[in-house]
Structures are given as C-alpha cells and as structure tokens.
Amino acid sequence: VLDLSGADHPIQQLDALRRELELYQSGLSQRACVIVANKGDTEDAPSRLRELREEVVIRDARGELPGLVAPPNGMSRVTAISARDRMNLPNLVRRLHAALKTQQTRETKELDRMVTEPLPGAEDEEYE
Image 1: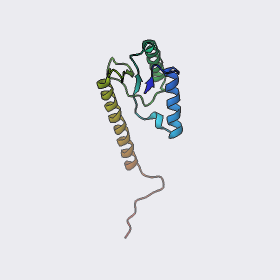
Image 2: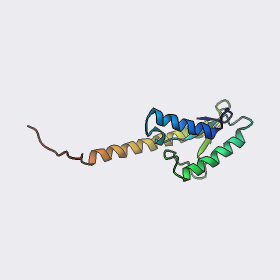
Image 3: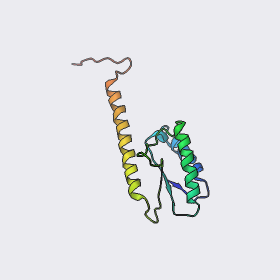
C-alpha cells in the first residue's frame, strides 16, 4: 500500500517496497500482487495517482513488475482507495482475491512440476 500524501512520491515508495521485499526474501517481489494507493481523498492525490499509474504502465510493459496481477479489462493497474472514507474498498477486496487466486495457481503449477519432473541422478528403486 502506497501513500498518496506521503513525503516520498508513491513511485519512490514502490521502489523502496520492492527492494525491501527482495532483501527480506529473494523472489518475494515477484509473487502475485496488486498496487494500492491510499489517501485518494487528499489534495495532491489526483496528480500523484496519475503519475503513479503512468509509471506502473511503463514498468509493467517493460516486464519490471512480474507479479502484478492484471486488472479486469479497462481498469487501472493501481487501485486507489481512501481508508478513511471507505472509498473503493469493495474493488480492493476483489483485486486482492484475484491476486490470491493467481498466486495459488502459480504455486500449484510449481508443485505439479516438481512432482512430475525426475530428480537429476535419482532413480526409483524398491526397498525391501
């Protein structure tokens, strides 16, 4: 969740968050995610949100946001909310649900691959 009224621009916040995720656990920033911009009700929110959305489109097109869950057709990649005013929270819940389903699908495919691919140098033997 990025802060549209913070001292740091939301784009800087996004960069810092992705770095922190990678430092915590390698590959964590590539898991399914949504980008949420809070405080959409503040004075600077419209311009900061526009800039953030434009930058996210560019980065997503360059493949720099591999975990970003695609929004439903016609919707922005950034979900703007106001927690204080409870603005757009149902949409956020739907986006989070989609991200969770996407991550579960990815993990299931990875487990299926691990189970079906033979281990290098390992052969099945029966022990008696």
